[in-house]
Amino acid sequence: MANIQERRDKSGKLISYSIRVHRGRGPDGRQLKPWTTTFEVSPTWTEKSVKKRAEAFAATFEKECREGITTDSRQKFGPYCEYVIKLKEERGAKHSTISSYKDLAARIIPAIGHIRLKDLRPDHLNDLYTALAQDGQNKRTGGKLSAKSILEHHRLISAVLEQAAKEGLVPFNVASHATLPKVERKEVNYFQPEQVAAIREALELEPLKWKTLVHMLLITGARRGEILGLKWPEVDFDRNQIHICNNILYRSGRGIYEDTPKTTTSNRYVVLPAETLQLLRQYRTWQNEERLRLGEYYQYQGFLFTQENGIPMHPDSITSWLTKFSKRHGLPHINAHAFRHTMASMLYFNGVDSVSISKRLGHAQVSTTADIYAHIIAEADQKNADILADIFLKEGCSARGELN
Image 1 (cartoon, rainbow, N blue to C red):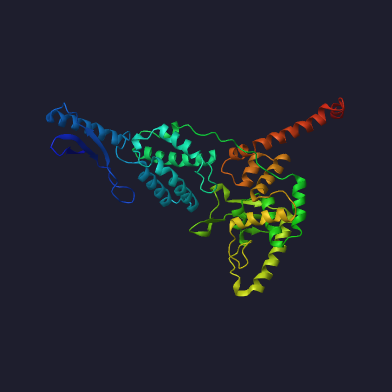
Image 2: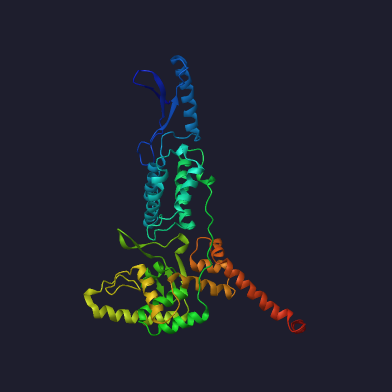
């Protein structure tokens, strides 16, 4: 039964009733915060009639609570956002995800954290998204946040309100009614075959470690953290494949650390050509010689690519090396992710289907792959049309005669 408590002003006049409904205990055995609301008293009502009205209101409120259609009148967005982030951390969300949530919350909570969940409206969120698009919001550049970054803030807000709806604190997720900025998808940058040839030629002048690492980025299409997370036991020379099941990340305050790949489907096997396996054998021999030369200084942990002493590399070290490498050889700017796009693009241009490419990339859904490479698919299809035209439509009807 709902608990009803009177509230009076200093003169003793009844001004409202505080109503609480017990929620029980959670899975961990801890007492859950009760549902609460306030029943305001009209100055024209008598105390006798007010009590009956309050009891009727409390009974309706308790019924709505039990049916999961009530709203909490006191819970504010800020504390509840922190509660949801903590809940996700307890349920096993990745460290990088939680860190990202906290960074986003640092902008969100000062803006709407003081607003009660039940009072939060779409226009509150629209005002926040407009403010985030103003200069000064990007701490690194001093400029505005991109539409993509604003959408990340929206997704956290939506996740918080979705949890509130599940717990019966709000009747629905108000974030679904906000107006979001339009994100213009940028066409992926990939290397043309002649650019790949130039890069490979320049790599012949570089240390074997970097030659092998960049080769792996191109052939596997793996993310840079996945390449740095590779260990020798996951290289199967008999089956011509590697198992991508580890990821190297960096976070301020934690440093370099190991984690699982980005998604469940990112844990995958990738088949390698014979040339790549031969290069890996050559590189393994070199690495073993280095281990013997360095002795106890080398802390062997099984990684293919390491710092000089054998510990995992910082992911940004790949980015900085590629920048210097491109300048050293007069090549266009090179970033690690461009090799991933290059591999996918070349497969599309050679008629490989989206399902196979998505599996090699480790995307959670084939639709993700199709969306990212939509313009590549269109270009590849145009080439297919040109090939068909060459075969069937040009040179008169020669092709038709050959078919007959």
